[in-house]
Amino acid sequence: MSKTIIVVGFGPGISTAVANKFGEKGFNVALVARSEDRLTAGVSDLKANGIMAMATPADAGDPDAIRRAIKKVRAEFGSITVILWNAFGGLEAGDILAVDSDTLRRVFDVAVVGLISAVKEALPDLRADGGAILVTNGAAGDINTQMDDFVTNQHKIMGVALANGAKHKLVGLLSQRLKADGIYVGEVMIAGAIKGTPTGDDNSIESATVANMFWDLYQMRGEIRGRITDPRF
Image (cartoon, rainbow, N blue to C red; front, side):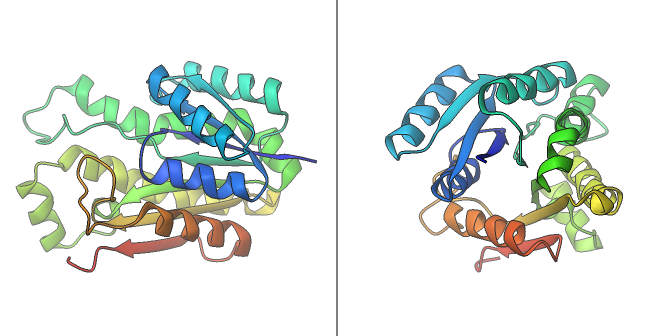
């Protein structure tokens, strides 16, 4: 029986590398993002590599849209085996004392509310397939020290840090909650930029390195967290 991975928050970098990695291992790949142009190009590239692929546009911070997207993928490819949550809520909530509540809420909607909605919609499939939920996260979501808090303030990424911290906790909660169902939950925390993305450069972390770690976590289904750090940090 074929397996399907749904990649939420598709774009250059990590999600492209994960889509190709799992596709090369025989998975059907479904892409979800807001940009239809990006989705069209992504599906075309995957198919050119011999990978069965489809796409559906959706806002990761809109629970109804995410549920519709998962239903569409299920109708096309059947049961969903893996969810990769790579959605990003933006940097607008840089200063939590200056940002408006709607903008701050948006970051949490993408990081946490959308992810929970996706898991709930796909839960019957994940249970049946012994599936997995894979989550990308930034180092700002790790257990904070005073130095981490200082850097977060300096770089005006407070909203992202808060949302990533909540997402980090959610990974642990979901892992415990779903363990008895045979569902694996794993997270890769990234300290640094990704090569090929707007914030990356030629010396940044290779997206394939992240994809390989996700594949290893999925295969071994033991440790729930991995971490990749730019050696320049």
